Image (cartoon, rainbow, N blue to C red; front, side):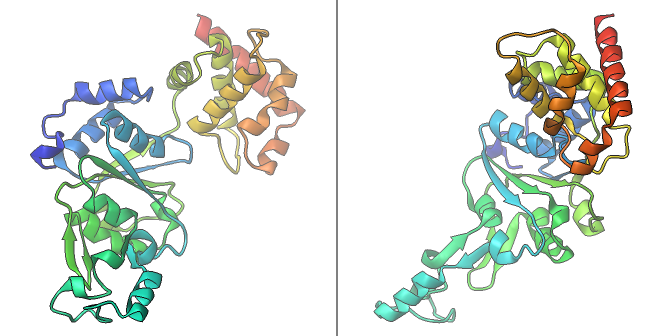
Length: 313
């Protein structure tokens, strides 16, 4: 990063302060990798299961460093015109039909300002917005594994040199490079070329203690004992061969659902019926919900009891 970005002298203490301010619970490896990404100006590739907090990390960096968040949500078939730029064809057509003085229909004019392929007709998409913006920016390329290999190739110039080539305008480079966070759920392998350009971070499902701390920060109105029980149950669910194992995001959703049902108080422990009624907040596939039969439900109740005792000891 350039000196104007304010990241050349960022310290580990600064990173931890940002995470604390944004209520993001991070292990030492996350803090160190984020610090290196900021200091070295390298893109950060984060892989892990859905709901592990990958996207949230980019949002935390944007909020903590008072930066604009530019998000590109990837999907199958994502093309350059959706990610980089496209021309405002309606405006171009109107300009040509109106016969505006000096407007050319091609890009061979001596002055770009005299062509319909010039700045006034350019529509910026997320990648170009992030490169041409001013001040601090965080570019989030979310779920890059949902896009195809051709889109990865498109990303390489952005990740390597913080620039893109627009045939009609030439090369557009960032005067102030953004912080780049690329996330992947590992639904397919990513190319070596993309990985080489990034620092790498794998986010695993949180431990019992880390998940309790997350709930304490995100859902402070929930009884500590109930939060411990929820963490114990989620940990037990992750041992099952579920189609979509719950991540930290689902645990937070479940905790908020339980807290909402207990707005006027309630017991300081989860009942069997309460667990059954609220499973839709943590399990998001019908096969997973149906898997929780009476036997597994007994096991979840036992896991909740054990987690509560461990938290109180």
